[in-house]
Length: 145
Image 1 (tube, rainbow, N blue to C red):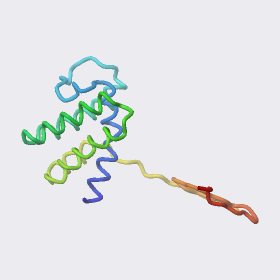
Image 2 (cartoon, rainbow, N blue to C red):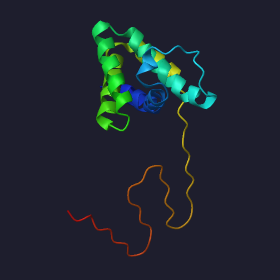
Image 3 (cartoon, rainbow, N blue to C red):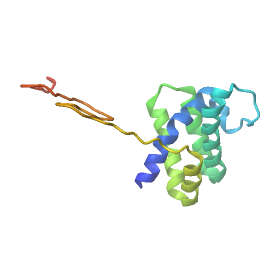
């Protein structure tokens, strides 16, 4: 699977979650003019547009699978497997249609770049970090199993 598809689905995930939280399983059939607060509408509305875009492009079997994944994810919002099944349906649709990849990329906002400036003795700069040590005679022991 292309890294572009994986990156797009990862970037879309918070919007999908917001849409499911705001609209539940009705996200696929909800009319866009329903009154919702502006803050929720921005994020959730984008998630809804993503799901509806994918749903409209699927065949009958693909629509049924997407609907089932949306239903399960809406009913079980804390279930990572349910969220994973929904992401899988999105990836599947994107793998099958290159034009859909371009349309989804156009919907998603530009990702912000991160700049880290580091200076000084033993300075550490990182966007994501596990363990960092910057002292004299530092020893790191792995966790006991």
